[in-house]
Image (cartoon, rainbow, N blue to C red; front, side):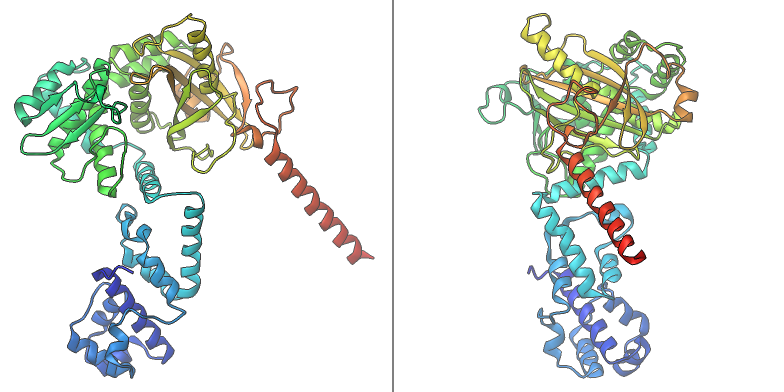
Length: 508
């Protein structure tokens, strides 16, 4: 166990609380015997304070134990589970402050029943180990919870982007050339930008950027990126500079996650970049016009993306930030899939689910995603067209767009889903598809006039083939048998049979 100051406080607090309760003494009793105040003693028991040696001697005398018994790291069998929990990497690195908590608050919650609480938390940690969930998985989950708590809208970052745009005299709603953002980094923040190193690097050519700190920072930028992708990375770097943070991501995609501060700062800098490049108020005006149309118009959406010079991913993700806040459409999800052209594998690479309907999380899942999702259909179509030479593998080609009304069978929920697919800039044989799903409820029907457009295909969908009740005749897209669905049905039949048998014997 790492002997940190927090561990010392926690263990001492546990021992004091347990010894006091074993002796049937109140805080007031021990306070009077030791000469410490009740409030100070309570702080010690909660793991928030660690007293000086003379005070520990007074506490030891008050409880009738040796000084060494209190200050040692050894604990009884009952307390051992709690000791293990608070020594875990998870507890030490998890960002409790996101939820208004500190580790000692968790300590206070579980210290009344240490063996039971410790066993419960150890169970969660064991599940994490079984499914190979690393600390970063928990950190990203904490970030998603943070986004959900705020409706994924952050006014201070919106205002930061608006102020910066006005300061630079970049007109409202205008696209910002990547050259202008580059000039800011070089002239104002003394950056050096290298476009040549990454594309030829044998191990790092897949990264969009690598940041090297120093008095004059160096940004290694992959010269094979599209202009808008360069603009986003430059804008994110400006966000980092404006926020003046020390803990930050060094690579465009995560190579190693070191702290929650890194994850949070990367999110905030990326949010700023999106808000700077896709100006909020003009975007809202465009969305109102699109939503007011009686018929779905994919070209109008494509033109809106082009108006802001945005990739589908940038555009769709920006919608998750403004649509819930300004249109009240809170039940939405964003998903990104990657697909190696010609393969049967689809990889979920990004997810933000703000709805109450579960979607696959991508961790430990060895099932086949439902091929009826618009993303799967779009990716397969794009792959086939590329194979036949009917379409370009260049990421600058206009993105494929599909709209679909998806009825989630397990939850009896209807979603209006938009999906856009295109090749990746740095992996031309891999296609990427982003999807944005809106729950079709009264709010959606009120704001989106084309919600019931009969030209939009409607399909029953599920999470995976293994969980789907549709028969082969009902679904020609099935790629795996419904093993989990059948197992659930078999389990239910056995439970019903057992209940029926038990009832018949009791009535006999």
